[in-house]
Image 1 (cartoon, helix red, strand yellow):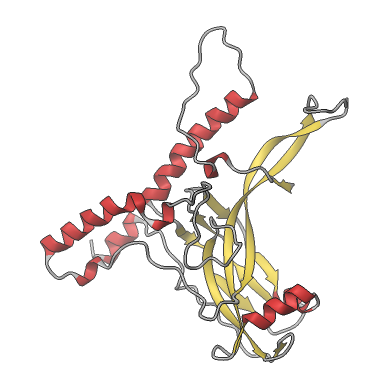
Image 2 (cartoon, helix red, strand yellow):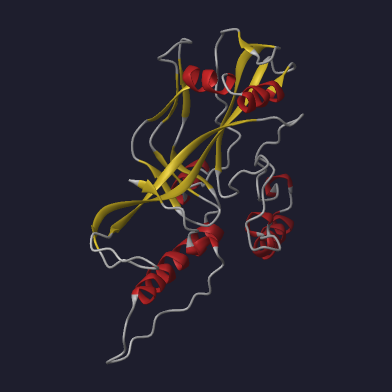
Length: 280
């Protein structure tokens, strides 16, 4: 499978037009794409506002040591919703070989520079964040007519697209790397029930223009506090950890335990779980 490089129509601010069918009308590829985009887009739009972006189930990040060729950062199976409302599912354990990854960074000039900038003396090492993002992958190639300025009789095209995921380790080079901010106000701090209800309604009114849904002048989803410069802004933050290291160029690993912090991410709380938390 290969990752689809074309921009997802859901990330293009498409209008929710449904295909209208009429007897005898000629249908083309664009009509079927528009049909899929409409249904995908309506579901994603509802999820992005109703559930917001975050972890729905699973996706706990764990460290498996010790340092060496078998050292891993493991993301357990689970599901998340990204900022466009797309469902991201990790069906089985996903592993990143941490020592191999670190060695690769240290072995390149840009990677070594990133490690130097990612070293934080106060934290005792290099700060790294784990992100998850939605990708689509082409699969099941089938014979098709060549498109564009081609004259080929052996042209093939994917007959299926699979919704998939990509894990990324992001070195935090900022002086004080930001963490995700809960998009909802702290309603529990309001002791008066009527005032709390009013604050709740105001939060719903304001959610239409919340930062999580804002786009820039070019129509791209704006970055949130947790996103690094140049990062895909639909990526979902999962965890942060520190790789113990000593200052240097690049920083040299000093060993010691790595404990991913899974609690700083945003969560999507199932209604049934909230009911149990409330004692219902």
